[in-house]
Length: 274
Ligand code: 13P
Ligand code: ZN
Image 1: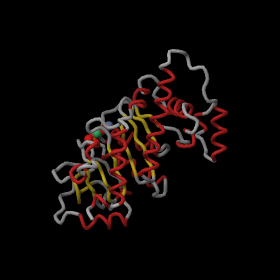
Image 2: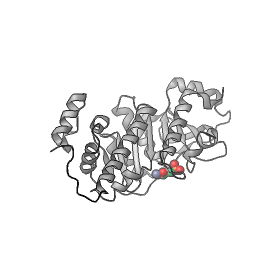
Image 3: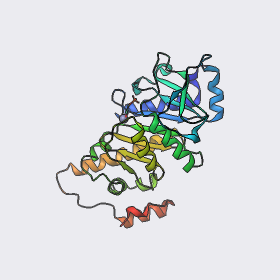
Image 4: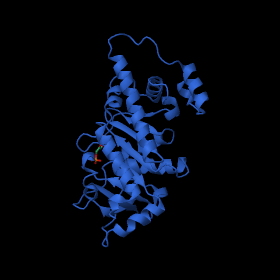
């Protein structure tokens, strides 16, 4: 059995492939990281390199991730290639004792480094590991076209986006009851955007980078992909309604949002309700 047949690798690659088919990953757009469970590290360990390379700075410090192993897409690699040539496009990276450096123990066989958004992924993982008692393991970034389009027409606030996305499809409040966070336009790939994102991840499972894309956190591949899909579909519906040329005649009321939340046993972020 090759490493690509191990369950966690199959799940990782399937999400990359699904995201590409949705049209969210032009060229090398978007990236994915997964914090591995100990038994998954043990399953993959026989494939680790005998000679492991040097430690490289993570660009941030995430002490709570010391000793963790991550599966990560490579920087500049295309999501459409993850399934057909996994070992050239994906790596497993080990984090050092201080949580400030990583080294590649497997993958990226033709060279390369983890995604340029590794600092954002790691800080988000660190925040979510603490906030969810370790249950969240995935950070997924996609260039979701309808969400990006909305960042040109809606005010860039958590409140405006959360309300629109909750109200554009009835079951949205059940999927992201906390709402979504907004990061203003920033330079991608550095510590600054990582810090801004991780602050919002303390409160939300999904954050939107203005004019760039979406970051989602979740416990498994299905839930994380499902969250990304729900956000993007809700944004698409709102854009379609806006594009009809007539005014929006009616929408889901705040009271109706409360009723949905009650019926499905979720707690909505009250600060976004009137
Ligand atoms: P990477 O190819 O480095 O993952 O960058 C893609 C991207 O979407 C940056 O935000
Ligand atoms: Zn991006």
